Length: 153
Length: 80
Image (cartoon, rainbow over all chains, first blue to last red; front, side, top):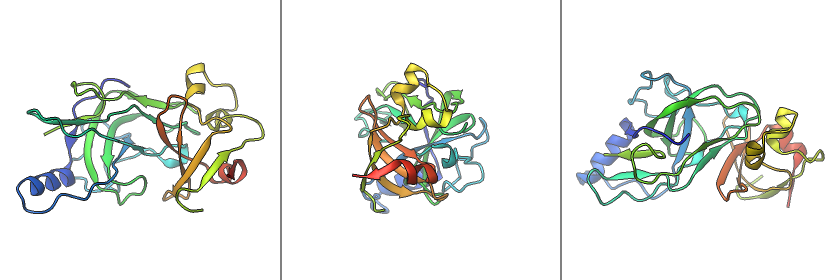
């Protein structure tokens, strides 16, 4: 899974970013962010979903061995547009049952639970359907479009 | 179980977690990515469905988080 589209901030992330840069609120405290996988069809994921409980989120079930992986992003680049991306490879699994076909990566702010806030969504360049025993890998970002989970504003 | 507790994947069959689920040898590529027997893990938390999440490092040095089936966890992960 090396080719990914540029990510898009979701409503929660957009609001946090705007209020921070326009000095309306302090930015959230430094913390970990996590990459989830979603089976939602292309064109069906709503950017207005605030949490991982959203009706169009459709995250892989943990009853397959799946768990969100630490996103571990770089700092935003000093460029326009500024971009941020995963600095290391991400690997999910091994899966103990077939989890279905994933179409999206969704960055959120908790390792588990549906109350996690949705930050950004990344449409996979090609879907993936891991089998039992498989692990699923995504390349580390480089700052170039199409490599890793890259998000820009 | 508390966050950060260290455990060892200790499956008497010697199989990795993914291999045990599949019931047969994995491909060479997937074997390298499996949570192998003898791997040290740290307990992170239980997810909403009661599956323990464990953190570990794979053969490539990549930090991983994996959900473990509860009965498998009880039988095959021992405190260090």
